[in-house]
Image (cartoon, rainbow, N blue to C red; front, side):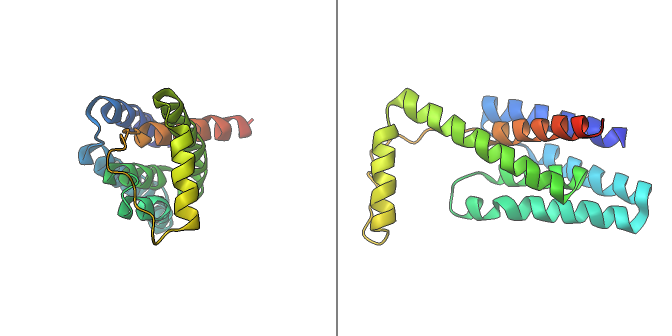
Length: 168
């Protein structure tokens, strides 16, 4: 299972770097990790290992696909979590997503505070919640890029450390 951990480490480091530098997580990163997860689990544990990996891939996809469809994140973010699930399983993907959501929320908050848009964002959110049909967003609002692949990668690293500490 050491190959799984090496692949995972390479995946999260390279994904975080490319997400920050190029605003992209490449298919070669995610698809190769998915394939390796499925293959390694199959060869180590047979059909049950393959199904374990496939379930993790599916759960990882399902956790983020809605946010992709509404335009909140990119497809690379979805594939990154799916690849993590393929490598480590569904419960690992869920735990990673939990920490990624906390980290992503903190990142978004820091961006809003830095740009001094926190108050306006709260006002827009309240307006949208109270009047979702009549809500119209100001097109002049500056949309800031949030490298969510970094949040997913950090969430995965936290999950790894916690699961490692539990093994003692």
